[in-house]
Length: 393
Ligand code: DNO
Image 1 (cartoon, helix red, strand yellow):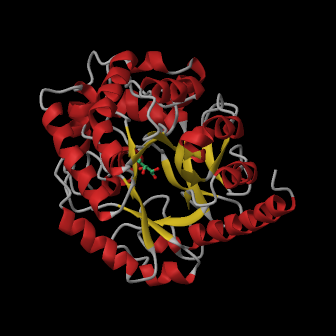
Image 2 (cartoon, rainbow, N blue to C red; image 1 turned 120 degrees about the vertical axis):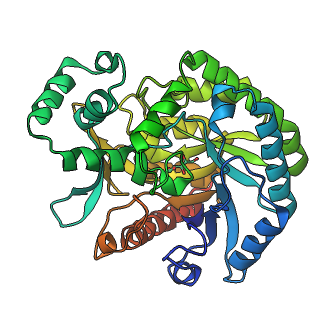
């Protein structure tokens, strides 16, 4: 696989010359300054592409070309927004950037409750705690009927939390769940928004009455509308699985498991409609057998995110070492490397270590942690390539 790295543009403290030195070959990035829904101009794309190439790297994948909420819930302006999306796609194609990662998660791009959960060795990792998430939902957001979505065990742990939770604890939860994890991915809430919870409630309201079925139809509508442009410019669209792959906050989620993936690939049976195989997101659902999914969908996978998680008996999950956890990354490398040695792959979320925690990196995107993970994966790939050369069948 091609070793790529998510880089957040010229303002990223991790520079392209640093990345070149640690063996990165391709860059995964976006025009982060352009608001969601606006057209990506050809000149700006070419500019960034040439900048990346001046470091001996290539712009391998766009992550993300965000899909506006209105396209997801089917608002009155969706056709207009889809037209703009198509122009951005054509511009990327003209510039020679052909792989696009996007997601179809309503409102929340990804969710964690703890961004610095300590490990015994002094590093820290991302964590999702169901009881804390329930606390956010039931006690902070005060979503109507929220309690019905949690098990009695989760609710009883949540009630115990309520006895000692301070305003600071509540603030931390809001920051982790809807601010710090969202702002940098062009999410709906920005770091400087004064009333994130109110904004969030407004966004949830947009999805009143939108069932899983309707959301599926809207994804199909979007994909069918853009396929002619994708055919013309050879654009590989790769939907990112829902993270976590569960129904949350009463919102429908439609890329969570084998049946979901099968549905959307068959709904628009064009090879340009493909998958971002995010091993970490898929692994955080105990229902997913990640290597089995990789075997089944490798031929429609155009981009791979390598990371792993451990799921606890109560459903909480913590991000694991790239060599451990339930994603079975070693086996994934065997599967994908045999299918396509040039498939872009990036190591995803890694621990904070050796001073990363003081650098203000985007949540999950440490430097030392990801560099270690990349080294581990590079080693795995070398072994796998050796296996393949001894047994090319
Ligand atoms: C989080 C990421 C997601 C991902 C988008 C793709 O770290 O995995 O933000 O980039 O969902 O659209």
